[in-house]
Image 1: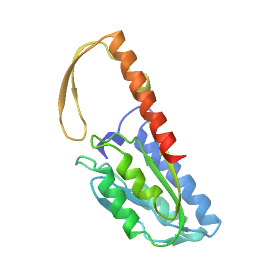
Image 2 (image 1 turned 90 degrees about the vertical axis):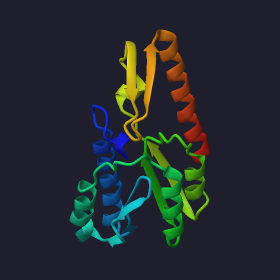
Image 3 (image 1 turned 180 degrees about the vertical axis):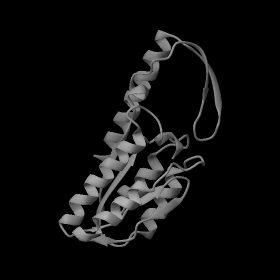
Image 4 (image 1 turned 60 degrees about the horizontal axis):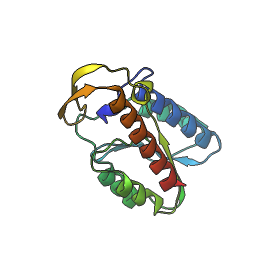
Length: 175
C-alpha cells in the first residue's frame, strides 16, 4: 500500500528484502514459493516457483512491486488470498498493519487456514519515534484524509502507548 513507501530506511524496500530472503531460503530448499502483493485487493501473484533456477524470476517479481494508490482493505485481500491458496504451507504476511478498518478480520482469514502463519510488522523509525512539533495538518497517505493536530508531549506519549498496544495486539493474535 501507499503507506509502505515511507520512512528512512524505507519500509517497502525493507519488506522487499525480507520477502527476497525468505523466498530464497524456500527456493534453494526446493520448496514451492508463491508471492502475492496485496492492497485493497489481491493485486498480483508470482505463481508457484520451485528450485534455485527460479531465484531471478522471484527477484524480478519483488523488484517490480510498487505501492498501490488506493486505500488498503487488508481483510478483503487476505480473504481472497486465503480462498485462492491451495494446500498447506507457510504464510508470511509483511505489513505495517495500519488499516482503518482494523486487522482482526484479515489475520483471522490467514490464521484460520492450514498455514503455519507468521506476521511481520514493519514500521519506520519515524513511526516509532515521531519527531513532530507544533500545530500540524497531517495527510493520510492512502485515503488523503486530513487531521489537524497540536503536537504536545502528552499527545506523543499517548501515541506511543497506543502504538505499543497495537503491536502487542498483533503479537498476541498471531501467537
